[in-house]
Amino acid sequence: MGMSVNTNVAALNAYRNLSVTDSQMNKSLERLSSGFRINRAADDAAGLAISEGLRSQIGGLKVAVSNTQDGVSVVQTAEGALTETHSILQRMRDLAVQSANDTNDTNSRAAIDAEADALNAELTRISSKTTFNNVNLLDGTYTNKQFQVGYAASDTINVSIAGGGKAAYNTFTDSIPATAGTWTFTQVADATGPVTSAAISVTTGSIAAGTSVDQIVSALNADTAFKTAFTASIDSTTGNLKVTATSGNGSAVGFTAGTVTGVTAGTGVAEAASGGGFSASDLGVIGIDLTSQSGATTAIGLINTAIQTVSTSRANLGALQNRFEHTINNLNVTAENLTASESRIRDTDMAQEMTNFSRTQILTQAGTSMLAQANQSSQSILKLLG
Image 1 (cartoon, rainbow, N blue to C red):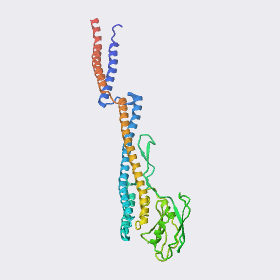
Image 2 (cartoon, one colour):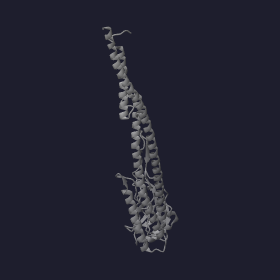
Image 3 (cartoon, helix red, strand yellow):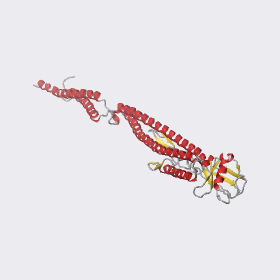
Image 4 (spheres, helix red, strand yellow):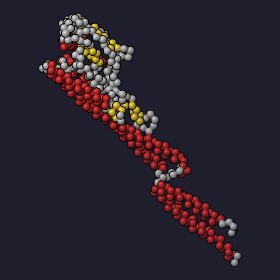
């Protein structure tokens, strides 16, 4: 190409290359100063979409860890309360064993029974007052609770804290003659109740009108057929005969009883099913009577069942806590790996970018110098015009 004044092609070329190099250096400066390789969608459209998805997962995982830690706290709160429930039941069992010994007189057994009643009340108080964030844990209502333990929808762990619970809606009919003869106790169930049994007839020829309630209780509890399904005791409040259905986890029905004139027939009273909590009623120990040897013997069996119920529940809670802790460990590892993946896509490789910056900086300096040289090259035409 000849020498031209109007069009300096060399300068245009130097300017174009300098503009490209200057743009690259500005991007390097932006990446080095922000620490991000992708600062806008134009930097890497696909990479931006992928990294934003990873960010959503990482944020969800961090919240899921917090949720799961709350689950551990719930389990520890419930299990801590059940530790004391266990201690109370063990003490009640000790009292029952003590009362079952016939070296005790009436006053001694009354004192033992009074302590058992107090412990029963504490069982119920613990069941109704153990809460986490104002939500009751041990009254049988804490069932099918969903703990969100992942970033995805429905990634949950189902938690239920349940105790024994007594049979539902047991009703009783009875025929109790006031004179010697056969007494019939029939346990039936309504439409929703699971328990039905045939009538149990107890021949009590030695019991006649004028017999004390103590003697009636002893005679009933000594009858093999009767004690397979029922336990007789004296209501500590009314002094009346009380019959408890052992198959109903302590579902008690009161009967009007006279201490001198015999026993008057009474009508069974229905009891609704418990919610599977850990109150004395739910555990089936509300009706225990330690004022007699037979009542204490029956109580030992009922308390054994309650202890087993609490043991099973505590074991389930322990297993659940271990599961939560493993879940937390897995969530933390997953969040760490996803964070590393997001970093590889979005973060600046500082060493590599510094190399690019040094290269573009040198090219910018060289391009600026060459543009100046290209602009000076036209000056040689003046010699021709000499």
